[in-house]
Image (tube, rainbow, N blue to C red; front, side):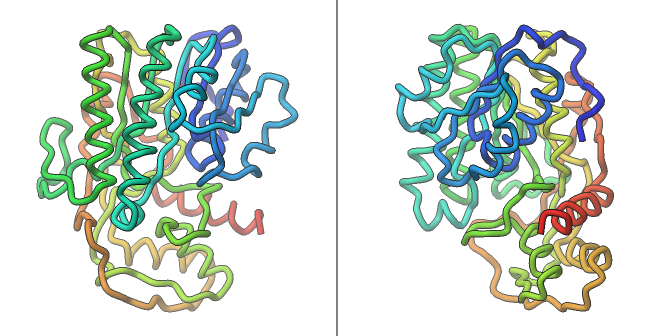
Length: 328
């Protein structure tokens, strides 16, 4: 992937920091930047949810540097930001259920860690700071599709931390002139998304179950819908936002999604078809704090970033399941 560049600038003299670069989305950002000859791509990750295998993918590249450190520690953030031109902040503790189980840990990483990174980037004179927010910010707002300027009440500690990120991002843009750009990601999936752990996302869990004949659970009735978005669309959005004119993006939040909606059961059935499995799902109680239906309006990203969907969800599912087959 990522053979065709989405940026027009020469990045061979630019230095980038990807926090959470050992994780799923972060490692794709690293892959793109290195493929297009960035002068340096630095990763800050404590490997609490990321994987050393993702770091090892780039270990042979002289333009790649890995820092085993935590965004919870301001000194680690300062060291990572030194000499950096652009920050792509994706380190976080994801998962709504995890945040309900452990709100303190979620706040420490997602809120305190975010503020540490903003301060470190500001003091280092970073040119632009893109960061991952979440569609969970929409909370109990039932509008469909979701528009950036109309949110509801957060339904989980995770959603609270992401809303706080957006507030801090805007304040740092207004007070300090920082070029911050936030993205509300909608159910991102793709290669390298792990099915392991108590808080794994639905699509990798479905694929792992279908390929290995394990029980696949669907929470609730399966009719809840999501704007499932292939990971390359996230990479594209980040690259467009890093180099867009400041007056168009500074302090802004953008929905990054496919701009459609698919039920969880339909996703399962599509993956079942691609895998050739005859496995049936097992339904169980729905999870607390989850939004029932989620679909993004991506017209703002289209207008200001020239963002369009690179790979639609159906093609993305095929690419993802092929990756899982080849990786195992």
